[in-house]
Length: 384
Ligand SMILES: [Zn+2]
Image 1 (tube, protein in one colour):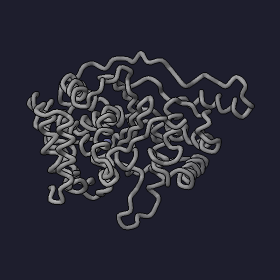
Image 2 (tube, helix red, strand yellow):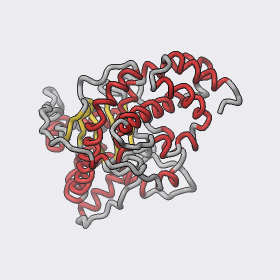
Image 3 (cartoon, protein in one colour):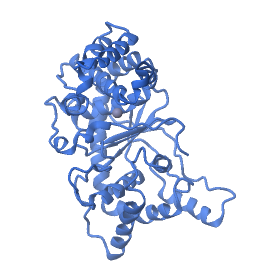
Image 4 (spheres, helix red, strand yellow):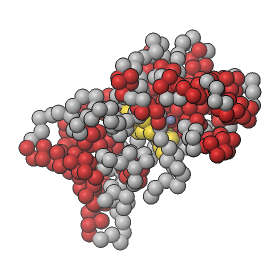
């Protein structure tokens, strides 16, 4: 079913602002996370889930679907778990996003019209047999016709589909029979021709990013807890790493349970920025109480400033990661600056946020002061 808590869009601005600049986004010149000391990967103790629970009273078709579900059940064991974040590289989730992006990739580009999918890092080309090609093409066409127009997070039923796939539960009522058949037909083709390379890219990304997360987590997680006034996760949050994802490169549904999807090839998700983006994504869950306070403080103007909390979240989490790295001798510039979020989308918030949230992050003023000061500055038409 659809998560009871509002799903939340991530990196709302990243693209609105549009792709050309993102295409040239570069690393900030700091050491890549892979360069920091790495602890040895450890095996996960997570239990297998999702598979093997055929409905007892199912009709034949449903029973067959459950059986097929067993055959395609997603990989339930994380590749790595660090700081209560469980990173997965899952074939079914990757297939779903690859078909979605492949549908978008075959659409004509009209002006600067916005894609809902991430760009394919390389074309999905392989020596398919005629039969495989027919099945694969039909799968992409199905996504084009039925799913591509729906945003992966906000689109009707899309989080429910994703949630079923995360559980490896193709028998779920949230996966309509046609989609179920498409995925079951396309999965072996995907696994044969594309998945080995995609999985390798995902696992390389996970290894590098987890090393960075592990390096700064002892400083970052308590700081985020303090600044957002929320406890860190006791149950690991699943982070699905996909070769291609949504237009923003990442999105998070609040759940419960919260769930993060991040692209391993999005140009904004590299090096230390990838580490920040991981913390940014889970900050979507942590910021909920502050988001409500900001919206209350805005009152009638909450609709006019519906992204303010998100800009605050980018600033706070980015500053926390920056401070943690600075203490370790790494000069890091947060994502929102390297990707021009203040310059291109949130210019009207820059002065108010830097004036009020810098001292908040430094512990010099209280939360209510930061929120009040921000809202007050936005009242002035001269506000920067
Ligand atoms: Zn976000």
